[in-house]
Length: 187
Image 1 (cartoon, helix red, strand yellow):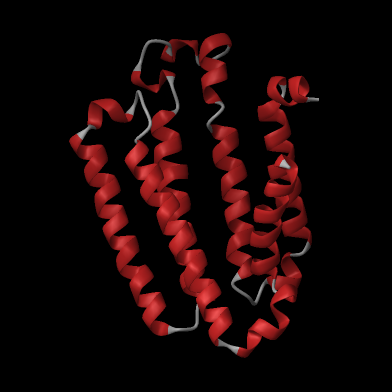
Image 2 (cartoon, helix red, strand yellow):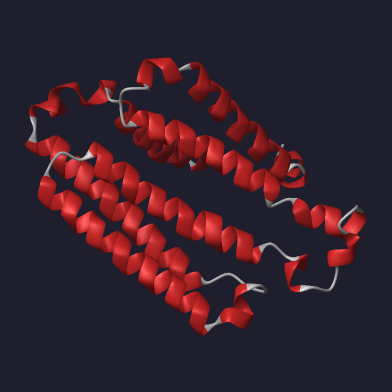
C-alpha cells in the first residue's frame, strides 16, 4: 500500500482535493449565507492552482517543450505565489470572517499586512531565487499564522456559549478530523 501511495501520490492527492470540491459544491446551497462559502471557493481555487501547477509535466514531454531551460521550467514561483502566500492570505481572510471578537480580527488584519509585506519583500530581495527554490521562511511564518488563526478561533469558542455545541460546528469538525485523523494514522 505504501508503494502505491508513493507512486501515485499526486493522483491520490488530486482525487481527494476534487472530492472535497464536489462535496463543497453540492453542499454550497446550505452554506451560501455563512463564511463557509468562502472555504468552498477556496477548495475550488486550490484545485485549479494544483492543476495548473502541473504545467511542468508538459514542458518535459509535451506541447510546452519550448519553455525547457527557461525560468518557468519549474513551478516554484507558482507554488510560492498561489499556495504559500495566497493560501495564507485566504486563511487570514476566512478567520476574520469567522471570528466575532473585533480585537482578534484587527490583530489578524495587521498580521496579514505584515505577512504580505514580508513575503513580497523576500521575493523582491531574492528575485533570482524565486524561480528556482522555495522560500522556507515564508512557509514557516505561514504555518505560524495558521496556528495563530486556529488559536484565536478556539479562544473565541471557549469564551462563548458555543462551546456547548462545538462538535456541530463545521470548522471545528474539519480541524479536529484533520488533527486526530492524522495522528491516528501514525499510531
